[in-house]
Image (cartoon, rainbow, N blue to C red; front, side, top):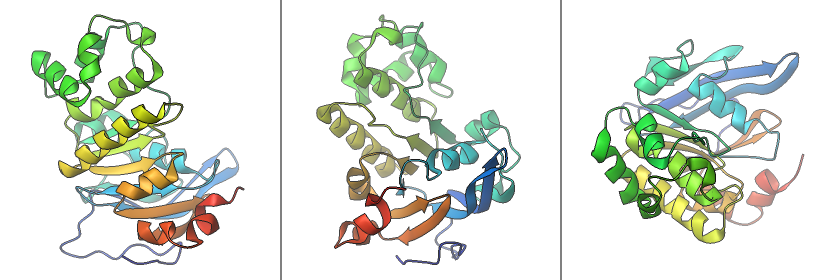
Length: 249
């Protein structure tokens, strides 16, 4: 792996075709620029860390990738297909799963009903079995309304969408936010299992060191621009982490 200039588009190779690629993407909220010429790639079966201070543009990057926002410049590609103008549900049908911050579950539906809503290809008992195999505690909560679950259980239910929709790329925004350490361990074990199954992951999380431990590649955003593109281990060594991630805006 290498460090590259912040705005340098990654070099393509025949054996390194990305699952997801953002090329020269910029975006604004009104007149305020929030992303500036961002290029990044997620390889199949890999975990890519997207780090940076609060307000750096991490969530915006995920929203652009999933189609919840449109870039002012640049393109978004999924397995080589330009999806820049494609609606979010069509991206989901093509294998892109976005798990946003905030434990997105249907609070007034039971756990079983939530699993049915999340499932596209797997249905019925198969959907439930897949979720329970990942998070056994959900098997004890099937008749319980999602809004009455603990925060950790709600996050497990939200993450189960990454199994039930059978995606090829998963975008995860702050999966460990507000969770107890033992639940954080469970979440990261699950994410590592997804990667091992061949799914490409783009991960944003407050526990940057935990993300770097499972990441194959890392990007750091500051003020809407990529300032680091390279080996996660390099960020873990010496003073690199504080230089790129540890400082505040």
